[in-house]
Amino acid sequence: EVMFFVAWFWMFFEVGLFADERTLSTIPEVASAWAKWPPTGVETLDAFHLPLMNTLVLLLSGTTVTWAHHALQEGNRKSAQLGLIITVLLGLGFTGLQVLEYQHALHGEYFGFGGETVGVYGSSFFMATGFHGAHVIIGTIFLAVCLFRLMAGHFTPKKHFGFEAAAWYWHFVDVVWLFLFAFIYVAFS
Image (cartoon, rainbow, N blue to C red; front, side, top):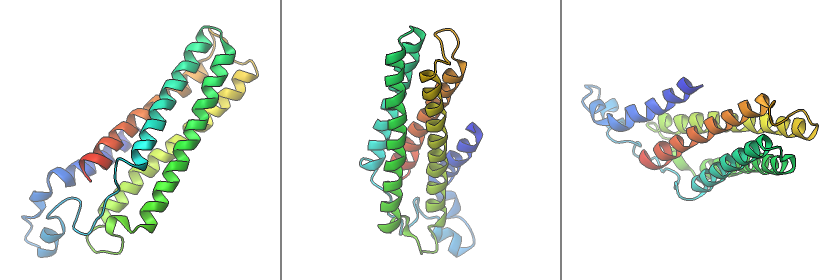
């Protein structure tokens, strides 16, 4: 999983940092297509609207899942349930905001769809953020299952590895999003 995301970050770093190298191509179309990153004709999304809201939602969900974990460790089942409920709702909220962002991007003619030189940027953007979104959905399902198990009394302060593993996964999703936000939305847009 980590290496898959590294590959998408690498692509953005490669074309963003070394675009000048491609302008040395003896093929005129290649040189002009890669003269700058993002390519000419690509209008990127404003990082400080929906993407920033999604960042705040995901960071908050990281704190609520940690709260739920600590509450469970202390034997406070009611607080653990509340923390997990909020985390699942925030996961659903993140997914909903990402759907809105995609609709905005597709209908607002961002990324220069239809142009000859812009396919790499849009394809990479949707692959990286979409793959992350799939991880959010999977993590939300993991945490919802943990919530039902917690409510059924399957977890105790000493025996709750399933929940702990789901929380680790959720934090992985958080960290990946921070890198996506910082580099794909902010640095290379």
